[in-house]
Image (cartoon, rainbow, N blue to C red; front, side):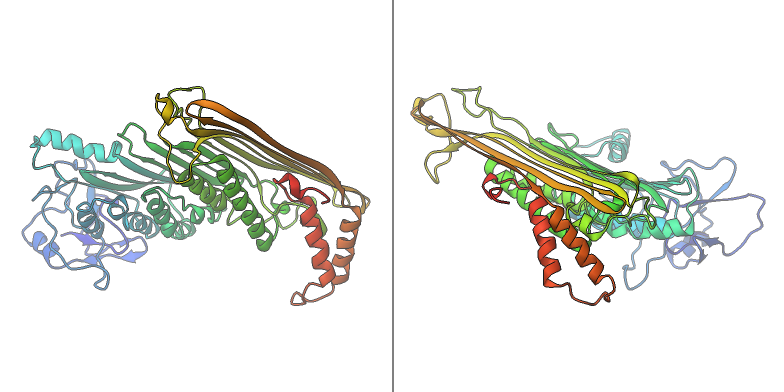
Length: 551
């Protein structure tokens, strides 16, 4: 007789002592397990063992293994007769008698990676949240034009779980010490899906928190499965760090090709990071969550993110950067700077609204994006196409207490790029060794911008407040016609300056004091808005030197 458990999948194995008396129901995953009917009952009636080992499932040596299979709700799952393992054109790791196998049997017949992985991440995570502890299934679609022996097919099937063309692995460490691993694999000839809970037992609260990441994991997989891949990881940043201590996601796309793309993501209570490496280029984004009291309001965060996304677009345009790679970089930066954990309730040093107005609003970060270099001109191989963009922010909050505090924040952005472009609009470059093809401009770009804010208090009184900003831009354009250099023009522009913020900060603190007794619903005064707006204007990073004049 086979036992059915809601919210669990085959591969969830409970060990039942052989001395235990017979029973008609057991409690698993906090749900009552009842006897099944139909095909399962028929198998029991014939005397077939639930635990009979297959070619891929070794028998237990010292205990009885009971496989708990989810009963699909009628509203969500069609009624079907599961085919026997390895029947027809599909070869299964185990008998496909569960709803997830049904999804896999449909997905494996599609070609688009997104369709192949549809729903799989969500279902696996939901099973873990429902109490399951392990699951493993793979389905191979043998090539009818390339007959293979059973041994060769077995190797191909094993490769689906160890070295598929496209691999995704989610690893979660919990506060209780348990480790959750979820894996998906897809190759042209098959699919694999598996999970395990090891090194401990999940608590109810941990399972509940894992349940909140089901859609987030599927969204991340769906994004990476697109062409070109997209980064949609923001949902994986919003977990409760008191229950889940870390979340890691790694993916390899086109693992068996000449230039696979790799993605790695990590998040815990103090940091977040993402690294992407591909044939087009690579990027890194790192976010430091140690100075949470320096993070601004949701409105300030959104404004700061918008400003950075605009700077990214400007850098891509000036340096002729790859749009797809920059799109992934932008999404990664925005995603890792979302769902910040709450600031400590009682920080050692408290910042006021005036202090916050001179800070960016975002957590500290470092990020870089670099494209694979190319030498597209065979006549001048020393002319290479490059794109390298680096940004960072660092904040220091010091002093012996709130009344005697110091606040400093440094931000920088640099762009180094070079590229070839046609001298005729609408006519693409086709550089060869023929001088007649050598009609182009070779452009070199070198931009940089810095921002340094420094504020200090003594006995509660403001002692100094200033912001130093600098920006420079340089573009060199070398024009060639029929292979000959006809012009070489460099356009440099730079500006720097220091703003004294004492008067504005004191005015902002007076506005704070005046509005402290007002209700939260009271509108901000025009004077307060104007003061804070002027502070932000004089302290934000400015990459255009012409805009620093007089500010």
